[in-house]
Image (tube, rainbow, N blue to C red):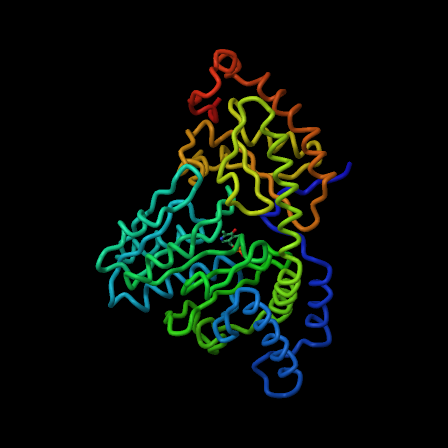
Length: 403
Ligand SMILES: *Cc1c(COP(=O)(O)O)cnc(C)c1O
């Protein structure tokens, strides 16, 4: 059976050009960048070349790029590093409710250390309104945090306006761009952000490598202490093959991003148009201001996990905002923040396309999905309420996770 991967927001395959660039750094070019002899200097040169490429993609300078073990570490370094270094100026942080757990859990940890965190509401599309941010900033606020784009619903935030609000109030601004970097253009100068997190494996690079953009003059407390690598902000021998791979991925993105975004936007819109023909189906997230490859749907009367399993049987990999198997049975915090009921959130499906997605992949999904949705609805314990259901009203099917 042909396997169809439609979960690029979870991770991407590594581009073969990236693999090729990395290989010599496992074998003949294995030096430690801190060594002064030629083996070391060869590795150091490769790291610096990659740093320049990662910087160029977001219009930063090389000195502003700190390599980390991935997006999670970059988010932790940004949030905890900034808070701990600047706590004498204030202990209040504002953050949107729809962040990745790498951000939310770092904030929760800071709360336990005596910081105060305000969680900002978003509108029905997942957008943070500049007024909401402005209203939450107090005299002791030091940091504002809003994701560049959301990894579940794909909504792209108005970061330039939001960062301007923060800047006017003397508050630093961190944006998690792990899911959007390499997919849409990001210019840190233009956006006016102080900190920005990136992850290589969401943009056809390897897993386990990421970076934090730290604008000149922004001071952080390091999380790791040791040999003083990465401007003393991230000690530890550099992941040279990973960094080289990230650099290559950034170079490719720089060249191909624009054309690729156009292709994926077209494919995505075709997909959305067709899927919305299935009755009682809604699109989650912003209709236009969203990542090129992201589509997220809510199907009434369906269990998202059942949908994922059925699709997997047909060779299709996609993702859901449902988490019935998690101990808490909590649905996605992002879907509930945009106003979905628990039942609606549990019936959601995220389809994400990327560099190697084809029209055939989308057609395969469109062939299978209506049939699977119908079958699941036919066996749903809420079948009766489905028949009584009036189009346009909100469905509150209850906690059907338990049944
Ligand atoms: C994937 C992702 C992360 C975490 O990055 P890792 O490299 O997997 O640690 C953080 N934020 C967002 C928005 C992501 O999509």
